[in-house]
Length: 494
Picture 1 (cartoon, rainbow, N blue to C red):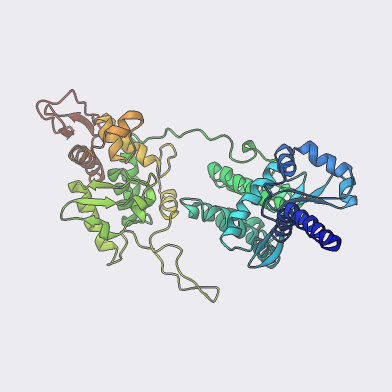
Picture 2: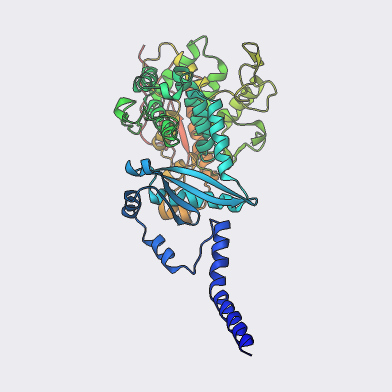
């Protein structure tokens, strides 16, 4: 009887102990196997996670070597030597595909507690999708070992940060390939010094492109900052440069060509033998259609309906991501028919001028199936006897907008002609596309341009507004139409 009571007591004691401790033992075993899991039953640990600050991290380091769990797999680790120097590593511990893995997120204090938690949060999101973030990091490091030059560093930065995020990544790629790689592309990242960065910037400024120099400085700074962040180089060679060291502060351009200057431009385009008729037509179409340069130069013929007199510009091809149907004036239709003959059956309105098949013995293809973004800029630099203030291709849109205002075009119509979004409440509620009004305005503007294009000599044309609403009549010294406002004819100086 006593033996039975003793055994019953013993079994009861053991059962009671297991009943009270088994959940905790089971959870601790689970946490040991799943470091990314959290144990809500341990209130003290949860409270410590919430209250952890940078001061707490420094207190851990003051006690020597440390390996403290911050929460959800993020761990603060330091050897005795690193602790004495006030340094540590952020390590993310996790399980993926049944295996325990670790990824070093960065070094403390360069990577703060807040930044480490944010990086761990992003990595955990990938881990939940089955991505081994530790293996992915090793692949990146191995890739960097295979690409030891600035050119390859730039390509890695471009693929990681620019290509997936920018609407027009080719703009960044162009600056890299044209301005940065030719100067420092062959250097190793650790060999790049501030003087090399300065050489890149001064070369761009000397070519008359201060805005591009500012862009290049921004790209260099971000590219080398990525290298510092990943401990590939010790210091960012572009960190101490400012806009004043590149192209200087950018001021919004105000350049717009007056009618007299457009006449000089027309005369110079005709008189410069190597300018070419196709470039001349591109200039007239840019002025007449009020579009951005590459919206026209990259256009395809299937977007044009010359019978209906419209050009459907899809939103994917516009800067504002807003589609627009552009009415084609009679003069524009004649110019487009001439361009179609010169395009020789190409799918593009302005096809690439030269077909590249190989370069230095290596097979190559054209960067663009259409004319390149620099082609028209270079052609304009060839113009002879052009005695007017410097202008850029983009100034042609401002020229069109300014001269339409001189013609008396309503500002809402002119803004829609440029495919600008109306601002504030008007942009929200006014969904009218002003097609017929835009057609009237663009017809008047094209007639003026046509009169300039087809007048090698003669008087300067002044423009008057007809008595009937929306009618615009170009007027020369031959006389003026009854009902127009006061118009003056100024003879051309010989």
